[in-house]
Length: 287
Image (cartoon, rainbow, N blue to C red; front, side, top):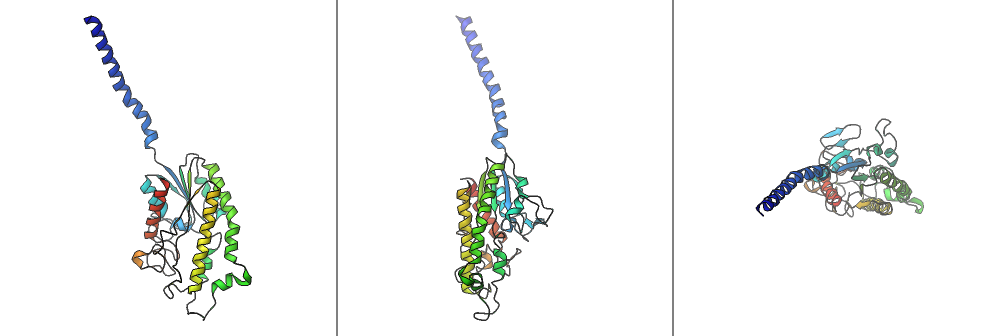
């Protein structure tokens, strides 16, 4: 009986030893998968790139090291490939921008986990339109840009936004083909100016300030619709940026006006805005 018990104890000890030895091996085998960082690709225009915000890490694309993709990637612990580029339009996703910047879609891989897309402002000419709304003298000493863009009963900017919708949708479909397992986040544009504006701080007449923000809102609606229809998610930056527009005190401003109060491009996010948008994007990515 003693001998059988000894054998049983020895067997149990051997089994326990085997488990102790094999357990770390199993854990070690799983570690690389569990700890692999998120692969994040950021594509889009200057609303993501962050022109002029220190420090600029790509002078051709005016891309900042503290733009919202970098902020979001840091919060997520992600491996970031940021190919956002100032001036980008949808065709730059598949062809060289400026004749030498590689197509942004070349950064997408089968292993990509997260893609953020910021596009539409240049395709619809909104920045140029906003600049044309400047009136250095108060009404009626000038011409309302709303009256120009809606002459004859047709809203030219609204028509451009509608026309850009299918190309945005097609781009989202192509992203899904290139990165089938990725979460795709389409980021909207913020609140650039409050109701009736703040003339002369931002030298745009109240009627034109309302028209411009309504046009940005129209673009955001189009982006949200295209995201929903093409397997992506829309990230609202307009609502959280209310009160942080170009009329806000410089300490509260996320979006700059015609004369920036910080080192940033006019009519673009400030560094504080990029930090806020990065936090919003990171939170949405983890839902």
